[in-house]
Length: 576
Image (cartoon, rainbow, N blue to C red):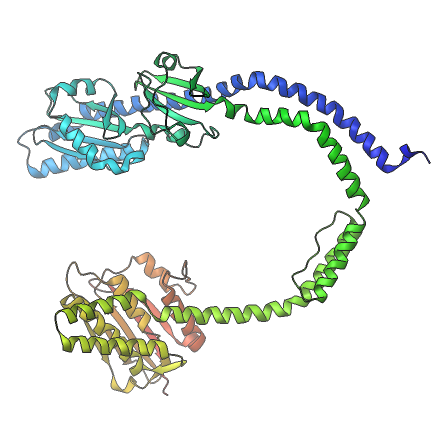
């Protein structure tokens, strides 16, 4: 039989007929690509740099125009610098100006700070410092304030954007006023690193970066790590706004730059030539090695073709053996051959059906264990425990022995209840005693800043309810509603009979309260917390109410008057 008629021989001939011409074409393309890649990359980056810097120039012109408009047309600006202005008029004038400048700042994202200055009162007011130099708020304000005590500098800042240095950062600075004798100024300051933000996501490869440079070629921005040693580039080349190459040490760099006459700065994208040609060099190496690669691929393809039938069979037998040994996680991979795909799919379904029962039982046990663990973890609040220990320490330090004993007694009762509450139901008296221990400890902590009042009808003390049903609301009130800035924080808890079959428990405070939207969200029956630590106690109580009482229980959140939150809990009366 003619060997050329075999499938393997024809496969090799077809593969060679396709790959050999392709290798020749790839070799020629790789050689040509090396000669044009620098030009293409430079043109691409040049367009991006030009667009970015033109946008910055337009933005700087717009900023200047808006500041000039404030000086020429704003009555508030005229009053702001006017001597003899009343305190209220002065306050409203500067407030309106800062509000207007804040609006500009939200629109012009490159501006880090707007400010106004009154020579009459020597007062400086500014917006927040944003952008790339947020940590320089005080040094920037101090520098601006000092500049107004140097009249010789004000003139150069009023007619153009100037480059200044504050500590280790460079900024663009501009002032606008009627003239040098005016008593009020409006200005803007921009960190040069903020100007790089639009190009922040530009892919300049490893070893490259984006630089902002001055007219002398000095680097003004914070360079990226690969360019941290770069301190200066040729000033003449930068002013011509194009691409050029420089040598730094042993590395040759491609620089694509654009100069701004408006700001007196230049933008430059700096990329090592080695990074630009890295891909092409590897490509050329691959092309040279392709004959060997092709040979290896042919051997590999023949081996795969030879074993295309036997490998799936071996996989199937191995999977059956592992299942027999108890490894129920065994699955067969998908196959491109239809017959084996059907066999593998059927086998996997069979194994999944066998393991479903085991998995269901395991997951149910796991959920029960996780729920129990979560319950145990939430029984002891580490912050509350540490705060209580701190109170005991302070009382012991003051030699208040009786108060130490009292606090320890309340703490012991509180944690004994928390650790031993494994019963499904307890009496209202037991719940209130636990709450009283918690509140007595809080009273020791906050002293005169906190007071509480518990009032319950005696006939309800033996009423039965789920354990820890009321305590989460009391703790939430202390954690989220407590405020010691104004009047003392007062928490009231009451329980009364509504009718023969139901009782009402109310928890109310005069604390910080909640927004109406949050109250509506908590009153929604479908409310669920965003995470396990966000109002998980409220969600837990609502779920337990539904499980224990169905629709016979009611939970309601309302705003308290004049402040705080009122929680109303209506429960069926059940006795032990």
